[in-house]
Image (cartoon, rainbow, N blue to C red; front, side):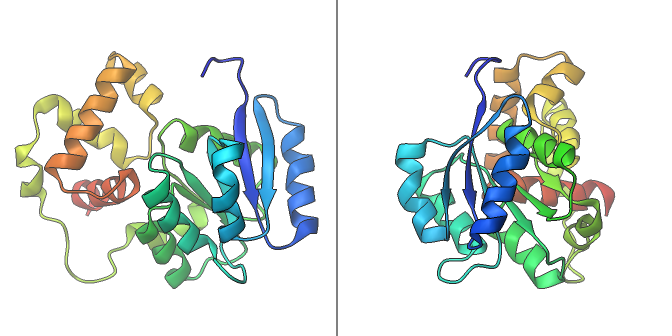
Length: 215
């Protein structure tokens, strides 16, 4: 993808009025294009192959296949396709369920257009985005069990530097710029982190690292 190519977005929400509203808002943002829409997770999965989205922007609560199941199914059928969840709910089970499913981000529906656009760009670039109002839930351990800092002993010095930035939700390009590395090198380090720390996906990796480094 070149810098001039807009990011392709698939909108998923059971309320047509909300889908239209989001389409209108995002149409005002340079570099973003809503290429398709769906009323639930099942329809979204059916449309992904033809729509070829870079990001799926989905509601959480929907009849039929909801956003959490959509995240899980996308991870299996379309690995690497980020799903950004948008909802009016900020209760703990929803937040933890979304992140456990592998969501690339979680925003509340009253977020600003600029913040939403930045979140879409960030998850498309490999970052993780959490609304500040729900981040405290995600970063607080669900149990008394904490990750052991010694788990990071298997990492090289550079992997540890990359790990610190992954824990903050930074994108590959941001990490590359900060550490003066090629973006491909950063991707290789992230792959090594996933393998060495036995993390299912980047969201799980970021949460694990954040709790280990800041717990």
